[in-house]
Length: 78
Image (cartoon, rainbow, N blue to C red; front, side, top):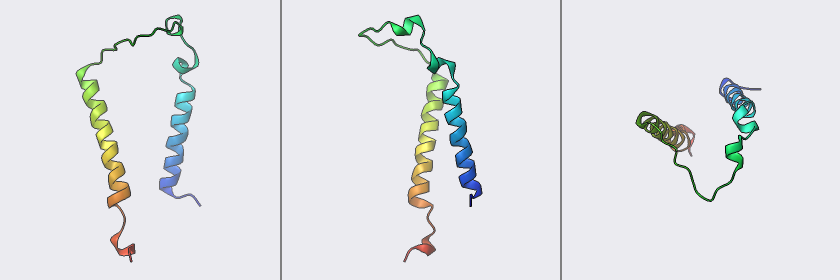
């Protein structure tokens, strides 16, 4: 039987899968992208975007650490 957290996790995973599969940018390459070069192009990003991505990553890392290391009920340990 599916519990509420499992059902939510399945729905989120399914949404991410469909979101990536339906993205037209991943389905076709433009002419500029098809020309391969030996150098990288620099993509300028705004400072708020960089800060937001960094804070989001740190929040996810903190959530994972809490989930796997600190969320276990101490009463279950023998």
